[in-house]
Length: 144
Image (cartoon, rainbow, N blue to C red; front, side, top):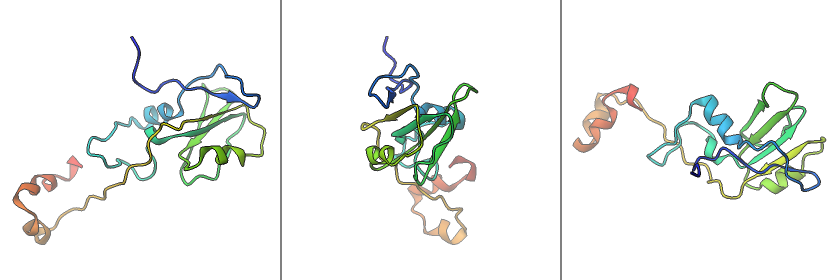
């Protein structure tokens, strides 16, 4: 049976060969955050979410890729680090890296970041202006 989760990915070394390490960087972030894909179409966090991660670098150190949101993870508590994030142009992001690296990963199929929604705590004036069928959305601050 084929899994639909993105747990594996193709990492390519500088000679264009596949590398044995094959974890999808987004899964590392999703497991760390205990992230659940939002069902309403809006982001549950500010910045790109785990399913938008589309560029990564495997190296013996953390590599700054110049992205607005970057994440770093140590591979199995070993000597290698994964630096990853969301880039509008993954190929140019990888090309600009000057330090020696082990392998790179990029995905052209990942989605663009979702817009985020800022929830406000309604006061009595706002509550009176809300339509009757929308009031249930604001009845408990813990349900956002």
